[in-house]
Length: 186
Image 1 (cartoon, rainbow, N blue to C red):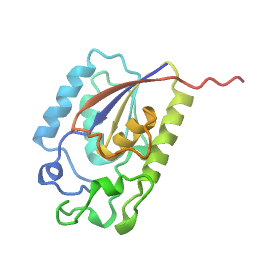
Image 2: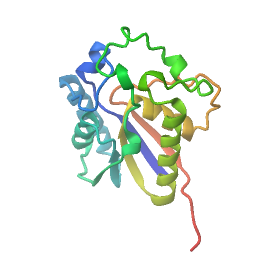
Image 3: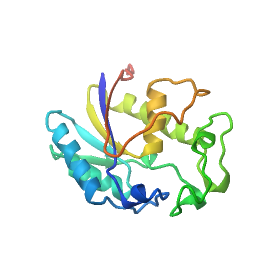
């Protein structure tokens, strides 16, 4: 059995202003407080390690929440969805329709936006890696809205023709899951 605690990074000014974030966005004062609140919740959890997206806001969050001073591993599969030419622009300015970009069958990738099927491939690969390598471990994962959404749907084996955009992830949320590890005979 593998225990996962999934955390979305704390708030940034980009979140407040509804601007599509770049890789270097940093936590604001509220985001630091949110991460500190998650840190307190993790005090009662005996986790083995943290696996985090390498982006600045997730690194900051991982550092703050690491109350047990466990190893932190950075994994590119946990980065935020690449929003292409929409980065650093207001969502409303870009006429971004999230429901369309989360339609698995439509699989839009225009304007340099990473397709939903590619996000799911990253999430599936990451969960398979966890199952193969971390049986009987408790892991804290620090990531981003879109990636956590995809992980949620992978873990819960959601029908990919359903409304994938419906599941929302708040800043500094703490989600808990259990996975069966893969056992290989050698």
